[in-house]
Amino acid sequence: QVQLLESGGGLVQPGGSLRLSCAPSRRGFSIINNMGWYRQAPGKERELVATMTAGGSTNYADSVKGRFTISRDNAKNTMFLQMNSLKPEDTAVYYCTLWRYWGQGIQVTVSS
Image 1 (cartoon, rainbow, N blue to C red):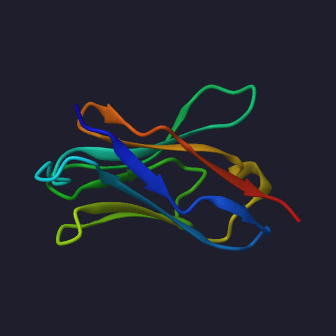
Image 2 (cartoon, one colour):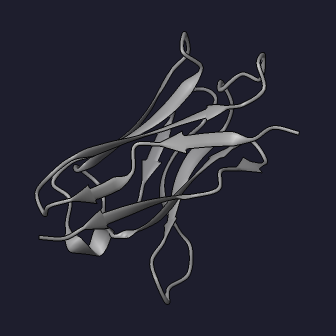
């Protein structure tokens, strides 16, 4: 079993930035795999934010294009979601996925 460990969430003002990180708990489990970030706001369904294939192709939800960037650091075996120009509507619990595994979720709150 592999756990995905997320970090980097928190409270930020509108217009601010956060970087989420996600790494597998099991040594030797590579992040060079299909991966992604999803989010779920209160009272809403979970939605796709961004994905990256093992080959490096990316896909973004229209609502975050130009503001969010998904990436990975192979040497650190860690994946990231850089979030810039954050808006209150970005407030949600964010989940990372890697192959068939999901993280526990991390809260991101955008508020003044």
